[in-house]
Length: 346
Image (cartoon, rainbow, N blue to C red; front, top):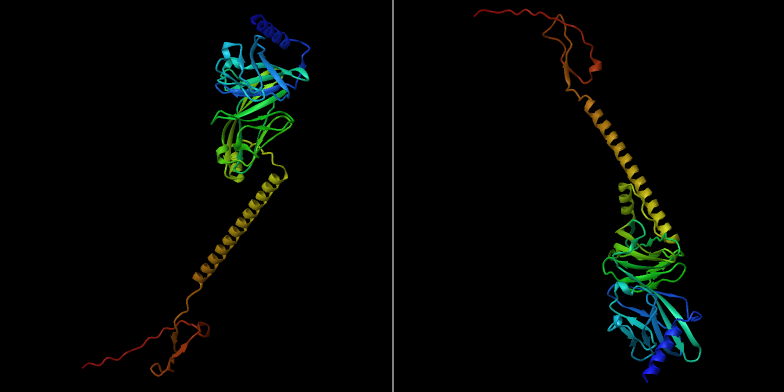
């Protein structure tokens, strides 16, 4: 019995290491964080069992069968391995040493054997290289933002924030985005280069983002982004002008461009109206000032003047005095009259 068991294990080992083994599907890139868990999913049907090994020691560390208990062959995985109804392998309490390439040799009852490869990446490790300096980008609440990826030969990018350290999305160049957090449902898109686009931004979206970029030939690096959100675009433009730094334009298509254009036109009209109102106010002040000045310089109406004609012969019996209302009707002349008065002694 023991010899039969040894022969079976040897057969499994040789089967897993065969160079002409058929490939089930393309390599699956999975990611998690240190201390988390990961599942190596099996999509094949009619599965009898799967033997598992890593690229480090090339030895079988576990065997799984759909709906049955996992058989652990390496004590490093004791208490850390589970299996689901399809035979998929689940590894928990991940450590730094778990990162790497895994191979599952799938034995099918009717269609033979094939090999499924997995590339496990752990994020949040202190030795992760930095792609480039942190990029400071901004947008407005309700708008959208793009996290640019400029790396070459990108295989996939896993995204997380500094708030919960959990992966919320995985993007691949030219492929649909994989969403891991319900908070981003219906709000995430991906470009042909793998860059991430988040729409319908809320105040909670501001903060530090990290994109762990897995490159085919040059390994993995981390790109950080600092997202700032403003209440409206006008405030953002004013702050940008004050800081003399360009703002990151959002990817919005014709709707966003139209909105920005209408906002600029409204601002221009408001500026024109304010200028016209200010000019009219200055003109009114000028006219009022002139009118007041003219009123102050007009001479007040003089009181009626009393004039009389003098008869040199009969001074006491001259014609009665008459009132002249207008100065222009009076001819002035120098007149000097000497009158003698008789004084009688008592």
